[in-house]
Amino acid sequence: RMLPVLFQLAGDECDRVQDGAVATIGAIWVLPFQSEGTINEITRFFDELLERGTADAVRRALDGFQDLLLAAAAGDVRALSLSEAFLLPHISHWALSRQHRDNPGTQRAVVNALLQASSVESITVASVTDLLKPALKAQLRRSPGDSRLEAALRCLAARAHPP
Image (cartoon, rainbow, N blue to C red):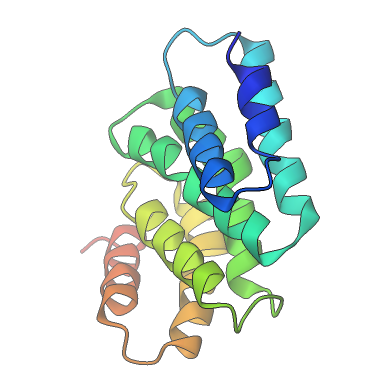
């Protein structure tokens, strides 16, 4: 019953209210025992938020992904499935996009989402190869010498090609 109110608050004029609403919607996304309808509704919400394409909308959506990525890292199978099917393509798209490249808030959200996603050890090798590695490399070109991105790339390379 809270979801419609949160969707409304996500469109509020106040940035802090929007940020809080989107973060809460992201947290609800991973709660156990959510109906398929609720999951689909939240997925559509994030999809529409990203389609707006504004720097603030992209930043909010990427920040809202954090709880789902944390759940995937903790072994939640549903969160892992949503991460691979929905989050990783979006994160990769915004990491590779030229749009908002000069926006520090959006770039911070992209880097944080990439780092969080790269820590999910159960992500398939195909997703690592096709989505995460190219996105991390693109971000590293924008931020040469970023030790967090370099470490994430090394970790992904080791997972894709174990000794």
